[in-house]
Each structure stands twice: as structure tokens, then as C-alpha cells.
Length: 140
Image 1: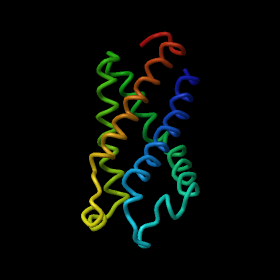
Image 2: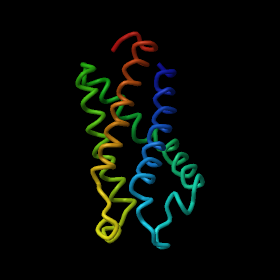
Image 3: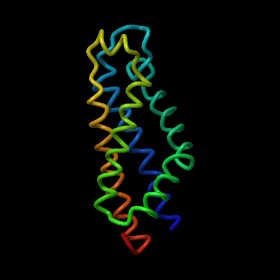
């Protein structure tokens, strides 16, 4: 059982870091002012800091959600729908947290990009959860 959740911990760290990196590449690179400190300015230091925060927050956020979902949602197909929806909500929150309203309007940033990227990450996380559970927990 511990192996399953360790796999989820590592994969969520990598997936969420990749999603933030992708969002910065797709939308953040449009911002050309020195007011915004993004991936172009901070480079991999930003990605490393975000990965560390994501790594440390997993036991407080995603682990309880995963345990609750596994306990109360018995069907894998429902989980394959729930995680992308949670990812989309997280994507909207991340977008709103990273980019100021002025940047969104001035540089024509699209929140739907973040929603799609994080929903895709949620789907991949659900698939990892499903296949890891089959292998390590012996059930769906």
C-alpha cells in the first residue's frame, strides 16, 4: 500500500511541475515586462522551487484527496472523470495566482490553456492511480 502512494507522490510532483512549466511556456512567455518574474527570468530555479513546494504539499493535499476518492468512489471510470475535473479547477486557481488581471488583458493570456493542461495532468494522474492500484493494491 505504501508503494502505491509513494508512486502517486512522485508522479504528482513531476506532473504538476511539468504542468506549471508548460503553462509558463505557453502563456507566461507572452509577458514581456520586467514586472513579471517567470520562467524566462528565473529559469530552472523557479521550477525547482515549485517542485519542492509541490513535493512537500502532497501529504497535506493530494494524499487525503486520493484516500477519500479511493474509499468513497468505487468505480475507476468515475475516478477517471473526477481527477481531470479537480485538475481543471486547480489549473484555474494556478492561472489566477500566477497572472495579474492586467497581464491577462494586456498580453491576451488565456485561462483555458491552464485548465486544459491541468485537466490533462489530472487524467494522467488518474491513470497512474488506476494502474498502480491494480499492481500494488490488487484491486481497482
